[in-house]
Length: 335
Image (tube, rainbow, N blue to C red; front, side):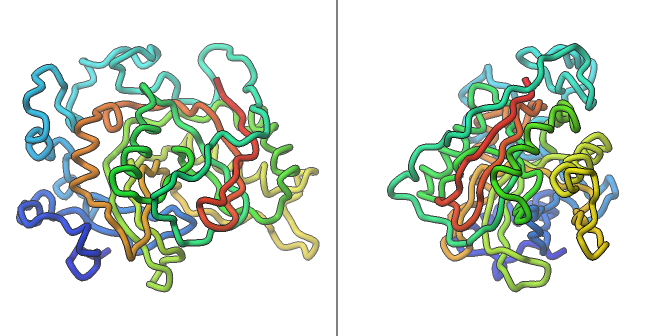
C-alpha cells in the first residue's frame, strides 16, 4: 500500500492541507489494485486497533457544514452502544442493524418476484462526462435497501454536482463480466437464485468511505477509473452466498464445473469478497471527486453511513462496452 500523495492523485482531488496535517486523516491509505471493479481503499495501514481511523473523528469537519441543525444526529458518528439500538429483528426507523443475518429467513417469505425484462433506466443525462473505460460481459448486481431513496439521490447528486458520469443504478457488484453465457441462459439461471442462494445476507452499516482511482497498466490495476464509494464488509454468510452464486452461474446445468478438457471452469474469485456501493465514477484524467467532498455529503445524509441494509434484489445487466451502453436484462426481488 502507498500513502496518498500529491503525485498520485489529480490536483482536483487532493486533500486540503488542513486534512493532511491531521494525524488521524493521514492514516488513509490507497490500494494499488482494481480487480474486476473490486478495487478497495482501506482506512488503516495494519489490522492493529491503534491504526484504525474512527469515522466519528470526522465529525468536527462535517459539523462545520451543518452546525445550525440542532436536531440532526452526529452525521458520521458510529459510536452508538448496542444497548441504544432496537432489537435486531425489528426493522424500524432508527434501527442500526439489519433484521436478518442468515441465508434462511427468520419468518416465511414469498418467493422472489421476477421483474420483466425491460430497462429501468432513462437515457443518459445530457451535459455529463462519459466514462471512457470499456467494460465486458454480463454482470450481477445486488440492489440494496434504500431509506427515502438515499442511495439513488447520492448517485444523482454527485453526477449533477460534478457533471461526472452517471451510474444507471446504485449497486454492489456480485459477479462481473461473464462471457460464457448468453443473456437468455443467464436470465434462466437468475430464476434459480431463490432456491439455491436464498435471501441474500444483510449488510451491516458501512465500515467507511473510499475515494480512489486506478489506472490500467499500473501494478495490479486492470481498469482506468476513479470512484467514491460506501465500503461494506463481508462475513462468513456473505462468503457462502458468493460461493453458491458462482457455482450457479459457472457450473453446467448438470452440476459439472469442468470444461471439455477436464479442467475446472469455475473461476477462482478473490477472497474475502470486498463489497462496496459506489456513488460516483469519473475518468482519472478528469477526476473531480474528492474524499472531503464525499465525507461531507455523507455527513449531511446520515442514513448512508448509519444504517445496515437488506438486499432487496439481484439483477442481471449487460455491461459490454462503455457505461452509457449498459443495459438492464432481468431482476429477482427477495422481498
